[in-house]
Length: 251
Image (cartoon, rainbow, N blue to C red; front, side, top):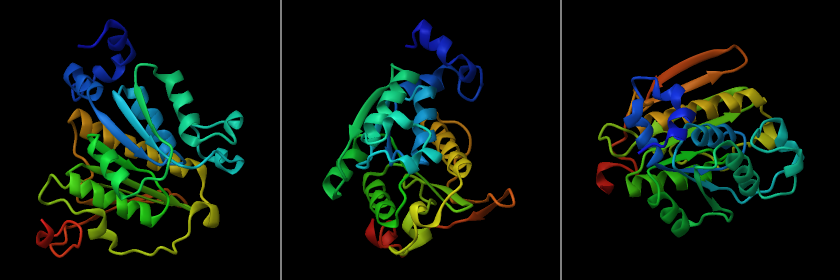
């Protein structure tokens, strides 16, 4: 049950008929893995903790750098040099001490990633490189866990939800194939701070919808964001039967 303090803390979202007490209880009982506690992972972790997701697993092997602070709003100047996971945990505890926080401070290999994904109900990919996104996607497909994937660079953002529990849902590999390991990162190409905040906030929203069980998740749809012109475009994405990760030949 929800305590009196929890009823007060979450009262504004409990007022929503789409959430209500039942939805808040589902959030309290939920576990989510945030891969990357940087520009995207900052608003994701902040909003999921504030909303009352019961257990947050945070995965990041990096430390806070001064150049991060322009966009990675979970960290502050005093955090420079600290492990990003530890910096994030301190901030999240201050926001909501009732949330259980599970750190993953080392890079996740195939086995540890599989175990981390299996331990949660939802994965939010907030990483900044294709290799990690491919590995996270494969682990989610293998474990049958939904994945909220976001990306932002320069003045462009993307967002989609991949849910292998749904027969019609594509996976990340259906959309991007083998990709390109030489793709630029934010440290090489630049990015505007509010854009990662926008994409990360939308990731958090999709995560809450999946965990609490309301609304229409962004499954089979790719949201494209043009920050320069403030334009949003949506593309339909179909599952690839021949996909080497989720295709019928591999089921």
